[in-house]
Length: 121
Image (cartoon, rainbow, N blue to C red; front, side):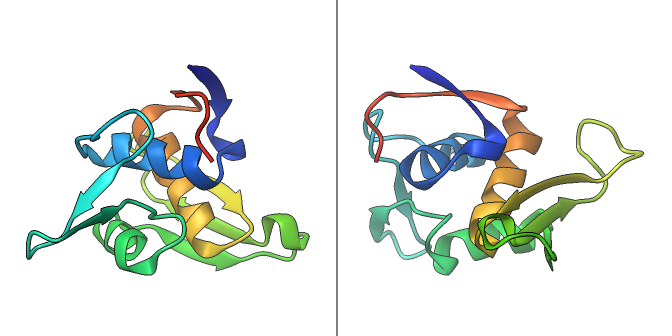
């Protein structure tokens, strides 16, 4: 396992952490599986697929804002109130709305750093 700051998570590591935060059962350390309402399953990529990340954004809810920052961190995601401190908003940045939202969601649920299995793409 490797420890990552949630603000630096991306690709497979971010999707894996989002699966843990969402409470999904993992088929193995490297392959989070998502089951839809009809029993179909697919690899869980909420930071890349709106069909998986969108429902999380709506449920929490997570607010998405375009920022004047560089393209690398163009989007800001906010959860208000902060689940760990109801007096403040909780936020994270990302290059896309889904990446920002999933970083914010993971940080809110799991903290500022998470342990991720090695070898995730």
